[in-house]
Amino acid sequence: MDFSIPETLSKDVERFKSFLQETLVPNLSVWTRDKTIPRDFYQDLGREGWFGFTWEKDGIEKQDALREVLLVEQLGIISPGVAVAALAHADLGLMGLWLFGSEKLKQKYGEKAVIGETLMCVGNTETEAGSDVAGIKMIADKIEDGWRINGTKAYITNGLVSDMAIVTAVSDPEASRNRRVSMFLVDLKSEGIKRKKLNKQVWIPSDLTRVQFTDVFVPKDHLLGVKGQGLQQVLTIFTNSRISISALTLGTAVGAFELAVGHARKRSIFGQKIVQYQSKAFEIADFYAKIEAARLVLHKAAWTRDQGLDFRLESSLAKYLTVMIAREVTTWAADLFGAASVISEHPIHKFPMDAWASALGEGTQDVQKLVIFREIMKRWE
Ligand SMILES: Cc1cc2nc3c(=O)[nH]c(=O)nc-3n(C[C@H](O)[C@H](O)[C@H](O)COP(=O)(O)OP(=O)(O)OC[C@H]3O[C@@H](n4cnc5c(N)ncnc54)[C@H](O)[C@@H]3O)c2cc1C
Image (cartoon, rainbow, N blue to C red; front, side, top):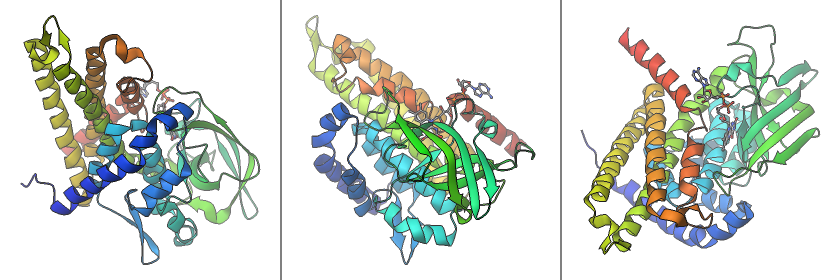
């Protein structure tokens, strides 16, 4: 068994870190204040090939999951809020197009999406249906030449900035729960679409947007995958994106941990540095061990995917463990800064909130446990 990171990937990580130091770090406080990420930044990410997808020989190609995990961890260390915006585009929207788009749709939208010129997102959750995906109410009526969509998607990351959305809607109301939903690629500039940016306090500066669809026309060739298979398809997107959101979450834990240890080494209390108190030294060792354990499980999930093996269990394990650890580490790290941690401009402030957000996106901890239990029972047979 080889735990070393291939040299080509280590070099990519170093290049990506330099890219982030140049393009993200100097701008982050302004983007955070304005709660917006300029479109140029997505294009910079895309041009440099950092989305994990490339456009090769007239087609979309997906790069290895291990590479993506290593890169996204770095982005999460600096800004989980910027990381989630990149992931919503690449690992939800573009991933859905890559997995379920027809050749014609990939040709039409893929090349620009890969370079961040066309931005994409996924709208699945509704006010009455989040974990219970099959319970969605958005309706897609079949009409001549296509579909007419009505309903509201409650929480869409990048819903404000995106050009195209992948949405789930009920196309066969009489069918069983597993066959009533289909997936559509919708142009967000279509008539009948209203967007409302929500006032969230996590994952700043990404946007979270409510999108209302009133008699929105979707051409028939914009149905993604197979009619009636939308539930299975959206869950497949989430199985994939759980690996990258786990990397973002690991980055959230590492970002907070590094800030806290740096502070503990500098700050003196009662005549000695925080780090010199053995209780604190033990906490640092404990959290380092937990972060390392979560990283190994995450790398195993990426490896399993890269081997072309079934990775449903591994991606949920990675999500479950990274979230559990990030929530613990970030709260501890904020405590270590004392009162300063409650000031919104303080660098540590965002981390506990962002770890909380990680617990919701791509399935809550309960949903991960449902998947883990189901998958281990299958392997038991
Ligand atoms: C910042 C942010 C960004 C998001 N971005 C997107 C996006 O881009 N696109 C999108 O479609 N959605 C997005 N979401 C929505 C997210 O996917 C949902 O919030 C999540 O799936 C949970 O759904 P819910 O909020 O309806 O909670 P519910 O499903 O109502 O869950 C409520 C509680 O019940 C628990 N629960 C659920 N099922 C079970 C069960 N079977 N057994 C025991 N307990 C259970 C849950 O764990 C939770 O604690 C985003 C959410 C947030 C907060």
